[in-house]
Amino acid sequence: MESPDSEFPGDRSAALVCTARAIRDFGDGFAALLLPVYLIARGFDAFEIGIAATLALFGSSLATLGIGLIGGRIQSRGLLIAASAWMAATGLAFAVSSQPTIIFVIAFLGTINPSVGSVSVFVPIEHAVLARAAGHTARTKLFARYSLIGALAAAAGSLAATSPGMLARFDLSAIGALQAMFLLYTVLGVVGGLIYARMPRRAVSSGDERHAPLGPSRRRVYRLAALFSIDAFAGGLVVQSMLALWLFQKFDLSLTTAAVLFFWTGVASAFSFPAAAWLASRVGLVNTMVFTHIPSSVLLIVAALSPTLEFALVALILRAALSQMDVPTRSSYVMAIVTPAERTAAASLTSVPRSLASAISPTLAGALLAAGYVAWPLILCGLLKIGYDIALLWMFRTVQPPEEC
Image 1 (cartoon, rainbow, N blue to C red):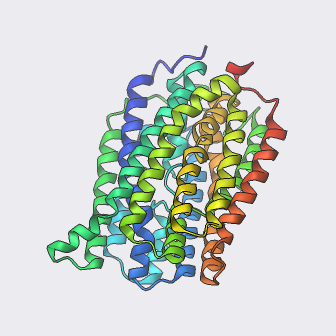
Image 2: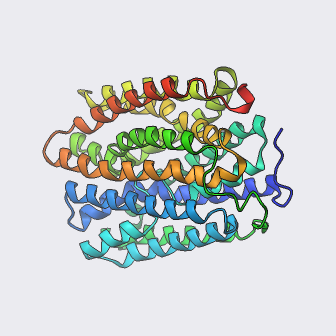
């Protein structure tokens, strides 16, 4: 059994990473929902909001690629602290900026996450930390716990998106209340950095750390990256900001109702993560990824075609209970089928194509919404994801992690 790095106390590091993720995802939870509201208040239309989401995701992908290239030569602790400072600067920049061009630049350079969760410069670093902290049998459970904590925090953040309405009672303008929330995002970045600073330092001069970014697992990683990019392109059509915009446009949903919806979808997703770990221990990681993902895609198509708001909300909540079960299993699977020295690079190089692919689709979704094709972003997402699941099962059904051999 693989043991944690003796120079990297696993339990403490894993606990600190999970705590910092909770802080960060709480901020992402309200930022993703408030982003379209803030941009609408600044005079942006649906197409321009899609462009802003695209720029945010594309910028994240480039940053994640950089992390993959340098992650084996710089301590994870230092990278995470720097990323937290970057998050704090992003919130401050959004709070004080009003010009569309500047907002586009901040979206590209910053850490605001229109999708919530796995598309983040923090993720490949944290995945490598968690993989070092757990042996083969505990790895999927640890990733499930990490995902559970993040999802619950993001759900709470979605509820916090109603705060601008409460702040308006204190004579703040609508814009001022939204700016206050982005200042809170800045504070959360600082708090996250302080948590990461408590992680123990780890030497980076060992042979494993100086291993080439990708070695014997290169072919597997590239094939997974290609498949994950299809899934991410599809997911980019319904990132949380764009799904909120779809609800605003199709059903004239209020911000308060949307916040409650995303809270419950977040809770449903969160409690699916330990279920995913339990299921994976019985049927395998790939089977869990595929056979929970396909029904969730069908439910998304059902939501797109729903004649009433109530029917759509039920479909979306049911979808949320299934759609994210592939998140901890996917992360665990990637870490399991590469060598320890390749983990940071593998996490990055499977995340970058996802980020790049997902960066393209919000603009397409915005264009479809602006043109009146309201159901098509959700329908296209569902169909593409079903195709991805079938291809993943076909190509990797025989590539098993150590605990399944």
